[in-house]
Length: 201
Ligand code: ATP
Image (cartoon, rainbow, N blue to C red):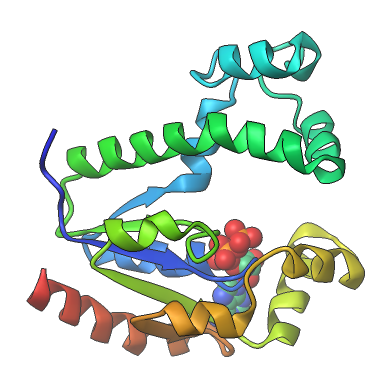
C-alpha cells in the first residue's frame, strides 16, 4: 500500500497529556493511531506477536488466556537488556506495520500517531511531517501520574528517568502544546495547530 496520509507524531513524557490532547484532535476530525493500543493488541490473547514471543522466551511468558504475562516480562526486561532488545525486535516492526496499516485505512482529515517513545526511537522522524510535543513541568507530570496510577513519587521518577528528558523532547519538536494548566488552556492551542495542519496537509 502506498497511500501515506499527512501525519503528525504526537509524543510527551508519561502523564504529560498525550491522550487528552489526542482526544481533542480527534474531536476536530483527525484520525488517531495509538502505538500503545497496537502493542497491547499484539500481545492480547491470541495476539499476532504471541507465537514469536513464546518461541523466543518460552511458554511461561504467556498467561492462561494466551496473552503476554506482562508482569513476568517486565521483570525480565528490567534486569536483562539483551532480553529487552529481543522483545523489541519482535514488537517494533509489528507495531510499525500495524500503525502504517491503520494510517492507510484512516478516514480523518490527517493522521496523528500517538507514540510515547517517539523521540527515543529515531525511525519515527522520517515517517511524520511534524513532531508535536506535549510539554509540562516535571512536578505537574509527577502529581498527575501519582494521582492517576496510585504510584509513589519515586516510582514515577524512575519511569521518567528511563524516558527522554524534557529538553531532548523539546529539541525534537516542530510544535509544542503546553499543558501545565487546566483543560481549558488546551483548547486555543489545539485550535491553532489544527488550523495549521488543515492548511499544510
Ligand atoms: P501516559 O503517558 O501515561 O499514557 P498521557 O501522556 O497520555 O499519559 P493523559 O492520560 O492524557 O497523559 O493525562 C494524564 C493524567 O492527567 C490523566 O488522568 C488526565 O486526565 C490528567 N490531565 C491531563 N491534562 C490535564 C489538565 N490540563 N488538567 C488536569 N488534568 C489533566
